[in-house]
Image (cartoon, rainbow, N blue to C red; front, top):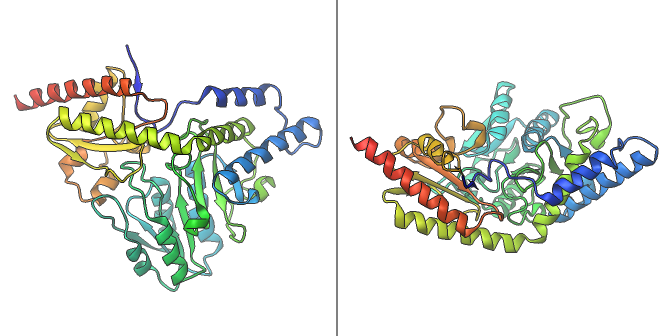
Length: 384
């Protein structure tokens, strides 16, 4: 049976080049970077090169990159680490209603600790108004957190405008950006955005799972979650995941080297696949806009349930999702689509297709054929 993987926003397959780097670290340069002998020194060099690769990819200082276990830890560390360390400066935080659960749950936990949170609405395309961000700020606003690319619908937030307004209102208010879905696919520009904290993850760009990174502007202070070692300047202590770090750097190097070419290729895949859906399947609600990220397409198919279609397509070797992977096994409706004003029946019928440079036009033709057949079959059964 043919397989077409279109769930790349959940995770991506590790590239052979990345796996080769990781294998070499596991077998040849497996020392602890804290050790003083030659093997430790070699490991430390690998870590330093990896840090430089990520820093160069977003034009920041090497010393401002910290490795974590993934995007979720990086988001938690950015939001809760800053809030807990700097709570004397302010108790108010601003975010949006469409953030990733790793940000939203962290914010809700902070509410239980006495912080005040403002959750901003978005428009029907999933975009938050920069003016609304500025209006929500108070004299004691400590942090604003806004994602770059939404993981469910691909909406791209106007970060440069948001960052400028934040700093104009209060230069001491920190700005955090979740760039997990954009790093390696779109330009990530902390300095242009005036962002103080930016989070990344390796497994979204054909790197390994279990490793991520946090950009932290040098002057920013935060409270670590873990204690017991001096690694990552004490911000993230514990023996480093060296194979993961090396693999992350290689994946980032490969992705950023072809950033523009890949973006064009992904845009073409998304455009052609959207046109195919429009021609083959009636009664579609489009949840992703043409101006959104090139690798994410979210639609709602009237008269169906997204979960049923996901299983039907999986039986044909086509792998997609209904939305965020962290919610895919739960009954809750998408908080993103609800915040965008979609009706409950449309939210229940939502599907997310997410592409990578490894996908081909031929594979998408096959996926479209199977999607059309599944929709027609389900609609026939429903009408009986």
